[in-house]
Image (tube, rainbow over all chains, first blue to last red; front, side, top):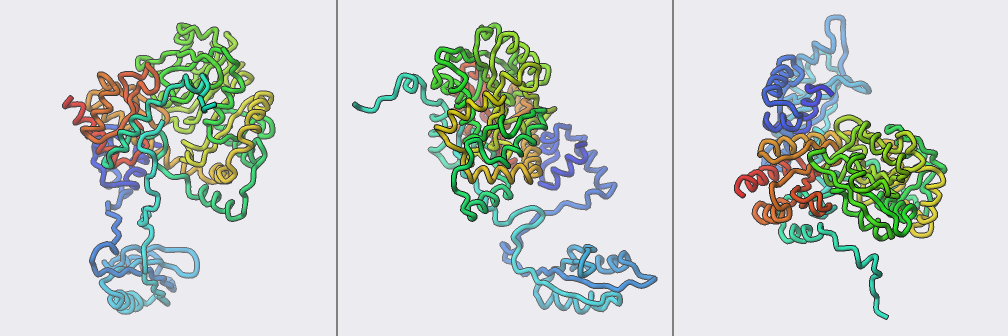
Length: 162
Length: 381
């Protein structure tokens, strides 16, 4: 694996490491890590750095939903154009074109179920190419971004062993 | 008559690791870098296969040699190290690699035989040799030589006269590996002086720079080598107790003669887990080895920064730095003052004195804190 790929793999596990600690783990110097990060950001490979938050553990009003969207394309309008219009809403956390029974899978957040429903019916459904929406409110998150919220595998090893 | 341990058993001292285990257990704020097993759990697919086998009522013995499917998969797996063994006649599945080591010593060591072993080394070999009635012949290795075993060191220790050599690379406790040419040199020595080899390759999959070379693949070595490996380290399955021995058919027949009367067969549930591990868990293993390799580089560079001499360990999950004084006193004070547990090197033989075995089978976050504490302790002593 080249250094860039190794860096990406490491950042995907934990992006909060200091440059020095990343350098130590990859066996390269800190300046090189900074240089690679600059490159990855400039070329658009790394889009951002975020925490994986279990919002349910925070006393906060937050509702999220997965929404299936069906669209009908015409000669002037393709997936790209529709995606662009949907992605601009800050309420839309993620947007993907998928194979299967529907076209787009989006994740929407709001302060209440009513808030999310209103957003879908007032902003998304009226887009002319959208023929159908199905909203699934998220009841519980067990795992996100590769992180298991349950953390069921505790360390029960002997403290010193041969 | 009261129960009295025989001379062989009574003559073997208690493991030096015990004392540190007890010291570390006394407090609950210890970060332990003293653990000789992975911090990961076995891959989930392997665990579910074990659970499923139990649900299906697969709780009887298997064939003495282990399930045929498992032996076939082991034969395929070992080809990555150019090892070619017939699953029907040349593979024996054992209860951990530890059973395989014990079987090999009891089978191939006759009373009074000289058994060479490099030092520092894993703590079980010397007692195993003694239980088998052999005479341990310690062959020193040192940091100056990256803890590699050489023909010169073997000759200097008088190993030309040895009957058996126990070889363990990648090594516990040092993390040392041997390159192909280094292995070849030891192989030539063994052929020239008619020495058999018990090669414990339990850490083979945890080789970080280059590829593991098995001594059994060197010219003239296959017929005189028992290779031992298992699922504990690479697949994080220590508690499932599953290993295997590879060797020429006659030799494996002999191992099986002891195994069939003493163990009957390796744990059935673990064999089902191992089948699934070999079939579908290569990605999980790669994820774990990538993590170990990052931690290895991290630990080595931290030792370098704090000015502790530490040779470049390229295998297993241990670093073996020099502590610049009495290793036992260092480890004890480090535990008391900073709450970090490491194992003093002399536990692994006199040649380990002055060193510490630092296991990096611990999460990055704890590892960082532990290394900072070691630095503080090292600077203040």
